[in-house]
Amino acid sequence: MDTTTMFDAFDEHALEEHRTKYAEEAQRKWGATDAWAESQRKTSAYTKEDWKRIQQEGAEIREGLAALMGRSPSDPDVQAQVKRFHEYMSTNFYACSLEMLSGLGDMYVSDPRFTATYDKVKPGLALFIRDAIKIYCTANGA
Image 1 (cartoon, one colour):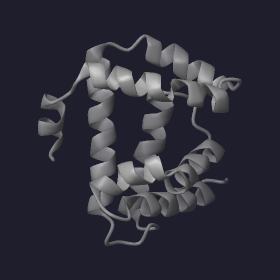
Image 2 (cartoon, rainbow, N blue to C red):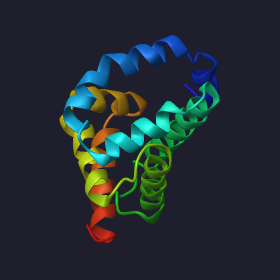
Image 3 (cartoon, helix red, strand yellow):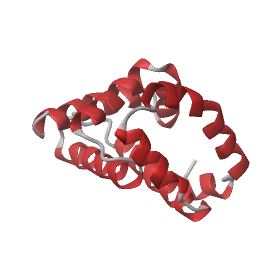
Image 4 (cartoon, rainbow, N blue to C red):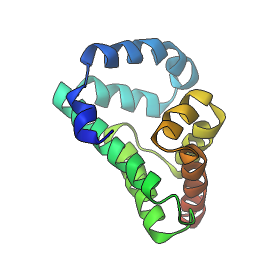
């Protein structure tokens, strides 16, 4: 599904239902962290249009990485997409350290819910992203 079609079907109720469903789990895991507080502060101020823009950019990054899966995770174009993802997380949610970014990559593979989400874009995408993130973090001093 292209991103235009995907966002034509954007359902604010479904998004809120998703947030509510996972909010308790997320708060248990990360609620005591500065990143959680920053993310809560930032996201609570977002409008529907902000969320649409953020969702659009996230989809573009995922689709960009999926399109590059025939290359090595260390390929400069793949690494540029990982850098874009890193900046996206830091800009829209919280200051995402390299350690946090690496943890996200691990979670995309270890949590079947994340794996299913990424692999729905293209089978094997979660593992590819994890591997590309590891290379990016190592190259940038993690």
